[in-house]
Length: 220
Image (cartoon, rainbow, N blue to C red; front, top):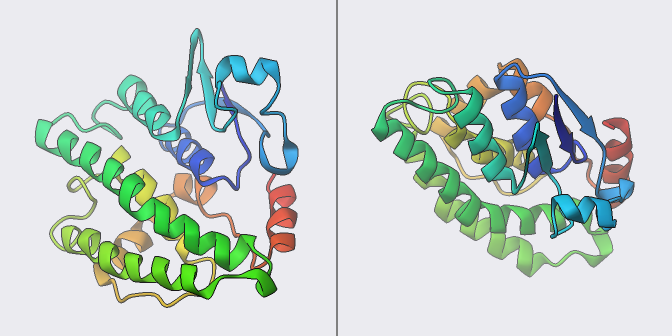
């Protein structure tokens, strides 16, 4: 049995849940981190010394870091499915997974924290504006790539779509100055039609810290 530790409203946990569901794998999930705690215990840190989620155990294999977990699942259970067989498509999946994590992740998280996780009276407009400007600069790169293919690594969904797919959903959950991205929008509509994406990624955030915590409990 595959076991996953992590709360459902964590984006990094959502990547893994989406991959597990996409691959049709049975798994057991335990809430951890956020309001659930449990990640600073000695037992948890034997699995991940960083004390962070997600952590996945599959038989005698225990692994942390969300992208590494998704890659592992794709390699072990998704050859020709989430993991492309063709070398060019595989390289594309690796490329877009890393690109989203390194480039879109930081400004998206900064904007999310200012828009949802910070009380309205304490929000920093300058931080939000800088993050918005970065997203306006970077998201069109993925939009241009999606102009010529259905998914980031070709005509089939791959693990390369997972990080950006989770991030784009979160960017639809709160108000900000969104750029016009027709190809990302078409791609995102396709993702939202997939039951695995619906279960793994499509969780609301709320608009305040209080709403965020209430949703965390609702989606336990």
